[in-house]
Image (cartoon, rainbow, N blue to C red):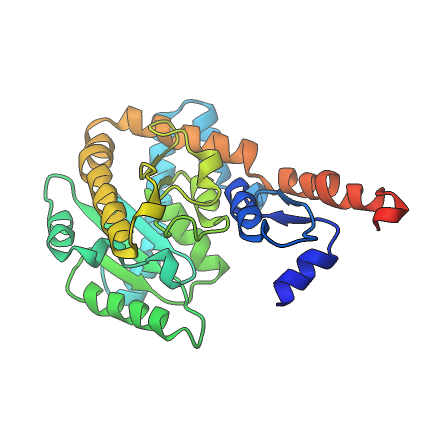
Length: 308
């Protein structure tokens, strides 16, 4: 086993979130001679990803300018939606985005697991929504390819659902700027870290997520994001876990997010702004680089020779 050999020969290893470090230590605890496994949580480059005008308006406590800038960013991204799909999205409508690598455990199509509830959500005239999916499966990951193709077919039935192709850096940045809700629903605890929610938060998007990866260290529920309450998933079958997570996501959307977004804009701003501040403070890549140097590389460089 190459992974086992690597952990035996390494002097130190790290997980890419606190949870990933914990899961990794649990995985390898029954093997002898395993190197120490610490945690250094992933981060993103704020200077590259963040919309500075949004931050400027937030820092000035300027609600009008903040909203005006966010709507401009949405309009600009929706030009891509129109180019690719022919659909005209509305910048005044709450927009949910799911965009990252397609993989089974990330459950891209989770909202469609209950089509009756999906239809109800999409047809809500009081609290309208728009949904964008984007991302890429690995070339030979046929289940993920099928899931992507299924979403494309589903999207053709709704004027407020779009699936975008060409998910590279430019598109990724645009749709994060357009996102009001960044949907992230991996099957706990499969996500090592995840970073797309970090860059989304840097653009005024609010994370709606399962409690996995980096979110465990970020989430201050009702303050900077929305997350599915943790349960003991070890006692759940995969199907039961999927049902629980799906139902909780819908409950949060219908009972908390939509009323707040449309009826209580100041409360919505408070969550946006708290997320923007928290992600800049704790999940900027400067912090990550420093931790790799001080907690991993520097200690290895100065380790006693008998330990090298």
